[in-house]
Image 1 (cartoon, rainbow, N blue to C red):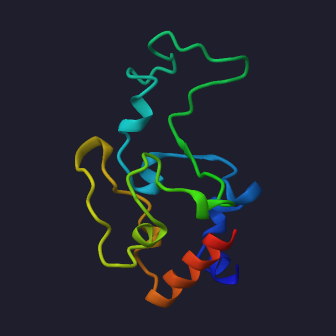
Image 2: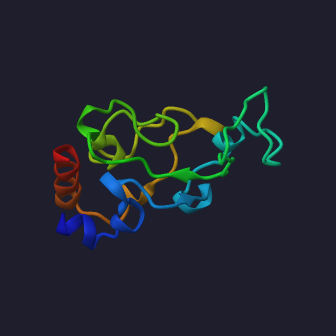
Length: 131
């Protein structure tokens, strides 16, 4: 937990069960913005395709960090499910495998690859798997 905090992970994952407390812009996490158009192709805040938002619901055009508790049971990672494992998310076995280029790529969230030693990556993967 100390390493998780020391590396700044709590800045985004400091909410309940490791979720974020706010929405983040796609540029903040370093990923393409194609996913924000899936429900609002014109980016005007009006949902497409007959989707009805409930009272108090709105389109954010952002990403909220998911909860981290229970990651051990998750099979896909990142906003579009393009990363297969925590080891790949942390680039533990070399560069993250490229699943796709373009609008639905596996780019983004480089915080888990860049600026961490192999030992830190291993410790963070173990910590996340234990949550």
